[in-house]
Length: 136
Image (cartoon, rainbow, N blue to C red; front, top):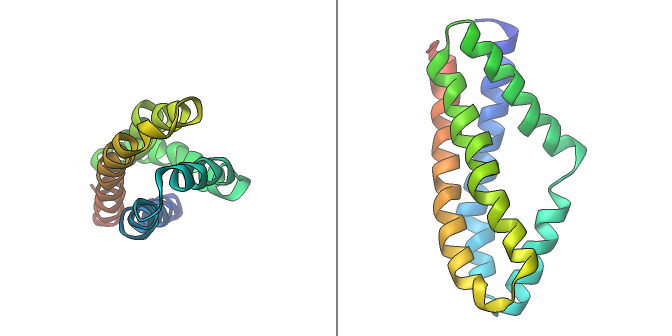
């Protein structure tokens, strides 16, 4: 197993942990708040998560997993690229953008749908970690 594979697996694992934390603690915690407070907190989280360290892991692993795909570990690489990166860009980011533009009435639907897709991202990242380590 090469260095790129180990780093890609570690980065996928880090992302799985982040998504797990959101699914099991952050979103349930926000669900306990009034919509106005929860929406404000999530909007702030969405700003703060766009930091250099997060972006290095999140986007850098797209590159590493792309290399993994070309080196034959197609399943592990694509699980991250599709299940984490593309899903984030196609589902979660547009929902975050809508949260910025809407009122508190959107919060319940956002919470439910965003969290569901976050579960999918977490499972995809965990599966990516395992399959990369197994050489798939």
